[in-house]
Length: 173
Ligand SMILES: [Zn+2]
Image (tube, protein in one colour):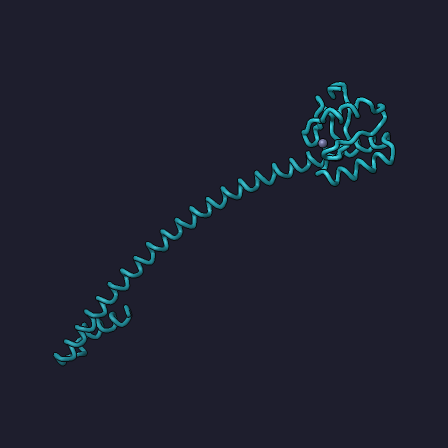
């Protein structure tokens, strides 16, 4: 379009067009082309402004993504460290359990494992102040008397939750 305007202007300046009607038409075209060029320049300017604001937004979002990623990295690092700690602790506990379970009679260990599976991971509970610490229920007087009468190596069970009851000096008997 710009080339056409230049060409028109050159034709006008060269004097090759002599008819007043042609001159007028050429002049009109030059004016019209100039106006269209102005309009297009406005459009280009607007597009450039929009591109600039889009670039700013991209930069802003990129920065936010970076910040979120840093948080994710930090949380992942802490999670991994905690997992390693728990794994190490689990290994120690598993070893301890192996030692302890080696000293427990096989049939009692079998009962304990069965109860543990049934009772959400707790197969034995301490009897503390006449209360089963597995289900938190207090033993009634008959149960207390039964416990009192039982020999020390009798395996006691909670009447309520069926867990193995472990007697201690604080059982309240
Ligand atoms: Zn119980």
